[in-house]
Image (cartoon, rainbow, N blue to C red; front, top):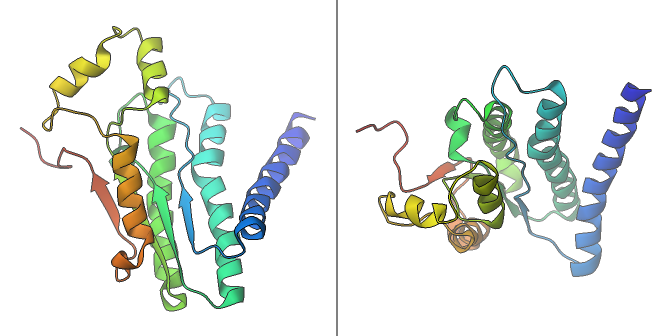
Length: 204
C-alpha cells in the first residue's frame, strides 16, 4: 500500500508540473522562458539521511525541473519558437558540505541535466543555463539558522565575514536570471555559472 500510495503521489506531482506550464500558456498566451527555482535544502549526512528524505529532495530538486522542462520544450517546439531555461542550482553541486548529502547530490544532478539539455536543444534554439548560487539571505535561511541554534544576529555576523561584506540577496539572483533569459545572453547555453563571492577550487 505504501509503494502504491507513493506511485500515486508521484503521478499527481507530474500532472501538477505539466499543468503549471499549461496554465502559464493559457494565461499569458505565449511563454518564452522557464525558471526552475523551487528547491529543498533539508540537512542530512550520509549516515542519517533517510531514503524518504533522499527521494523527497530528488523529487523536488531534479524530477520537477525535468518534467517542467520537458513540457515547456514540447510546447516551444510545437510552436516553432526559440526559448530560454534557467536552472537555479547551488555551489554545493560541486560536492557540498557533509551535512548536505542528498541536497548536494540532487543539485549536482541538476547541473548535469542543465548541460545535457543544453546540448540536446541547441539546434532548436532553446538555451539552457544554470546558476550555482552561493550563501543567500532569504527568510528560509533565517529559519534554518535559528533552528540550528545560531544567535539572532547571525546575518550581521555572517555578512561581516564575507569578502564583499554581505550575503547574496534574492534581487541579485533575479537580475542575473533575467539576463540569462533575455536576448542579451543569446549566444550562451550550457553554462553553469558560479554566482558567488568565493572562487570554487581556490583555497587560502
